[in-house]
Amino acid sequence: MNTEEEFKKLVIARESGRLSEDFANKILAEYPDDLSVNVVQSLGNQRPSASYGTQFRRSATYFGDVSIIASRRKTCEVWAANNLPVYSYRFDVLPDGADVNMAVTHFAEVSFVFNNYVGVGYRVPPFASKSMTEVANFMTNSWLSYVYHLDPNEWRKTIKWSGLEPQWPVYNNSNPTNFVFDSNRTSYLEPDVFRKEAIKLINDNTLSVYAR
Amino acid sequence: MIKLTYLQCVQWGTDPGTALSEDCLNMNIVRPSGLDVNASIPVMIWIHGGGFVNGAGVEPGFNMTFIVQQSVKVGMPVIGININYRLGTFGFLSGSDEFKDFNMGLLDQRKLLEWVQENVAFFGGDPKRVTIFGESAGAGAVGYQLIAHGGRDDKLFNGAIMESGSPINIRISPNKTGFAANYNELKRRTGCDKATSPLECLRTLPYQKLYDTINESRNSSVSLSGFNPIIDGDFVRKPGSVALADGEFIHMPIMSGGKSSPISELLE
Image 1 (cartoon, rainbow over the protein chains, first blue to last red):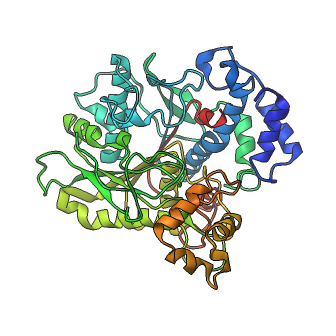
Image 2 (image 1 turned 90 degrees about the vertical axis):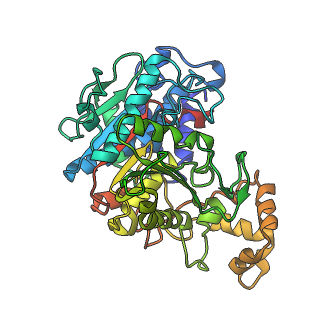
Image 3 (image 1 turned 180 degrees about the vertical axis):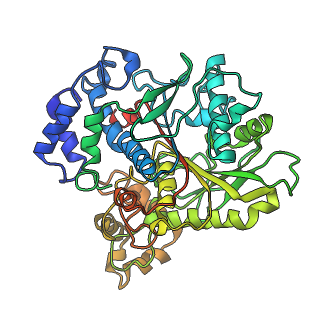
């Protein structure tokens, strides 16, 4: 995908007649061709290799939001509005053997959650370094802690944890927060406000435009 | 490492790796070795992804051995379970007024969750502490289980983790005939369009003939295998966004997450 026109065509075509030209123009405005904000941040201000097309990071940002990110945020908002605990996360570890052009993409955290240090089922074992193994252990323990206590933090009260990761807060709508799993630095918290207006545009039209 | 066994549900489009079978409603149960059957430890059930058209609980990458090993190591031992459910044409066939049953793949999941309730104690598991988790369409499936029957809590699980998926993220047909074009093409290619009851004709086709017909049509512009969940008015009553807005979901703590760039591989 190399032109804005191609991107726009796909934005419209994907929704089988529900997405108007006007709406597509709003999407184009909310999802600019801006490498400083678009996904695959590990590439910085670079575009991926030519075979991906110049609009790749832009379209990946939009379609990732449509298919996954927007509804994740909406689900968290609904749970929080009902005073129910929900723990939100963003996984940002590039597994070994992954394509840098695609960055931290679909499926990436499964091997970490499953603590698959052997790499069973993978061409390249997805993690091997000390820092990545620590993220995997931290994630598996957090998942187990949720299974035991419905709270991914609880296990840290034991002596098995001596890390520096912040407490993972319950999502709330006045201060929405994601826990970000990272292996290049200590995992951290981020406000869940990125692409706020863009994602709101999707979430305000979930049923009528996106049939979800 | 536990060697996973059993057959995968019938599917097209990816190399299945191991044998396919219509008789695929099975599960793998991995438990800590030497576990006392009276231990009553929590249970994790993985619902695999694959767009409701492929994938299997027995994929090597879903082996629960290591998560169970880690659980023992950190003093939070669990039983890990992997389930299969019918997919695509076999799991979600719909598209005409002939159909009385819908979303069989989701009902399979429900049935397997019920089986766990009835039987996991014999393995040392606690049926009152069951978390379901999944990724991609597997997370979407967890979402469907949360909004099933208008959000009725059948006490089949008390925790839910959705990794890149939710009750909302799957595009869903608003009526029972949303897959009519796919169904009509399936009838035509199998010759069942000329039968008095096309659905009955499809049901009585030899498995291999049905499988081959669909396989030979892999490049058809109308997919014969890409059937997905629909609004059926019973198990799935509303689109996810509406169910959530109406409060029709099981009210329980959840975990929900995603990746930094979740969909880029689909745009190659």
